[in-house]
Length: 328
Image (cartoon, rainbow, N blue to C red):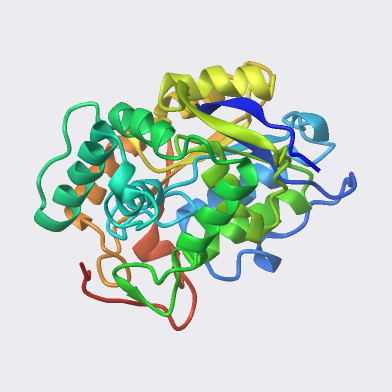
């Protein structure tokens, strides 16, 4: 039977949810879920918040349907230091190494991929506004693939060993303590949404293994057109458009998440809380600790709770994963 091929415009935005359990008036303890966390301010703040807003007797009680939490992906619950974003690594491979594509890659796609390679291997700074340059190049690089073909392509690359680590593939590079936050929130009646600047279908391929549903039409075809890059204030626009409610919880790790956080804090109906994760663990991850500590100070001044990977996480990627030198 001939496939139905429908032109598809690449939208670099991801907003999709995890499921919640049946409604309950009993708050479930963080101690039962957050077993990979050390005692810390961030866990205390999250537990006190959840206990308060799920207590029907509290003035801050939030109805289950309004318990909305938003999460950035890269650097918030998925690794981004191997040595850069997964989607950047993927484009570099696609345009410069993939034997089935590299000889026919357009010049601007190759140029963007080379920018990534020069940054990764030689420390050369990425060009100004590279996020958009990458987005346009990536739209072209995967044009013509059906969604099922692209899903398989992403998963094949995700099965490769993660650069800079032993005992882990790219597709396994989840921050294990943050995955426990998902389960804790679900158990207490929250719905969480992943709001990422990475390609929607890369996000879906990566997060499928942790139980986030990926509704998609396998026969749609990607085109080379880009509509939006889901960063900064665009995250607020997409949350408003696709969720239709102001979140009450927000989790991120960079300045690109500040607009999303501030949108959450602007909720005039319910009590809110926001969290910023800092990559300050240079023993277990490829982190710039000095930069991370400076950011922590800034985030606290902004009214955000800070999650320290070094101090708060008992493990990052799980037992058996070790930081190694990068290989090129």
